[in-house]
Length: 290
Image (cartoon, rainbow, N blue to C red; front, top):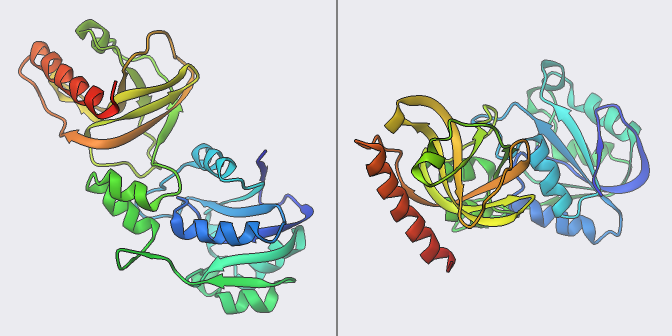
């Protein structure tokens, strides 16, 4: 069970506290988590929503699902408001440690916090009421593992590279909406999700991947972007689920784009689009062994 704590909620049970923004939990963060679990304390992770250039890798509901899966017991959630940004580092730590009982604290060597990012691990060590472990940055391929690096990979449709650095594969979560039912008319019914404005999205185009739904997990063809063949400029996520039949309207699903197939294209006719979708699905079946 993951317990969500707001900015004023108290935690009187001693915990191992992870400090960072954690907009996407990558393998560098996993090192912190593994060390924290060794203490025997339940793990709490601070998470900050907003304030990240290029959006967030995972949005609040997605992040909670991710932390729960990783075995975190508590998440301390902050919104990146003007007030939060301008809080002096000492005030931030004073308020944090007055309401959260910590048996151990963990952060990376590049952790910065407070107004002007003036807070450092050295200050944290001076003010924390418990031992503080500062871990070196993790590298992969000779380069620092970071959310910025992962976002660049997503922009280049390098899903394999991004997923190799993330603790769980990149996904987009949302409630299934009613669409225009064009896919059904073509013989390939799709589910539709809105594109969340706050989320870092991969390069627009068509991907092979899979989807997790209340009805199970299915291989999927995922389109991220507009539908130019039908003159629809509005950007959405459309996913065809191989082997699924039924109704998922209003249900929460997770879509995992894994392999970039092709750019979004304006086909000369609906028939030409249908033929291309058939080719995409044939490729998906081959890749998934279906």
